Amino acid sequence: MNSTLLNTGWPMWVMLAIVVGATGIITSRFLDLSAKKIFSAAGRALIQLILIALIISQVSTSWILTIALLLLMLGVAVFTSTQRIETVRWWVPASVIFGGVAPVVELMFGFGVLPVTPLAVIAVIGQLIGGTMSATNLAGRRIEQELSQRAGEVEAALALGFPENAARNLVGRPVAAEALLPGLDQTRTVGTVTLPGAFVGLVLGGASPLEAGLVQLVVLINLLAVQAIAVSLLAMMIERKIGVRA
Image (tube, rainbow, N blue to C red):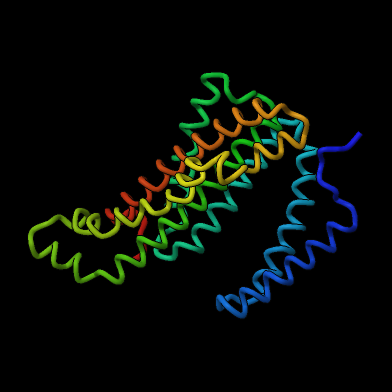
């Protein structure tokens, strides 16, 4: 009987070494991105995935450890966003990531969609935190760049009598929406262009394609929602200079 799981034997390691090496060469030669960053990212991914697999195997029987792991995920996401968005204090990304994820997770629990089990909670909430972090980083950096490059337009709006937050809104809000485009495109093209990770993982794990598709639908819709909430909150806070470094 053929297994639906991917082959993780030695050929996989050879293939990954070739792919990572080729990616490093391409990015360093054609995209002005150091190959070292590609190798570092791949190495960190390997170490972190091994560690998280070992950790999850232990925390799946303890709610205390489950909550601790989720807090660690949130902390790493906040730290990463604070590094990416240089003009805001750490509690700004903390607020918007938590503010985006919390209400959606509450709805999932309220309607009984998300099982109250450690593994399900870690898998779903972890994915929501990661997706929200990515959108937050992209939105924050784009707003920063736009406000810096188009400072004259902000000053012109102020001269015309606009409140400061409204003047900054005119420049920052349109580009903030760009952070939602990757998630929006993925949702619109799912099943036709892309087969996302949750769907593929469930099918490989033995779930029926229909069950996998419904689970993926829940993940995509909720991910789009948390990203929209987080990006909106971030744009509002930056426009009003809440938590923005002088």
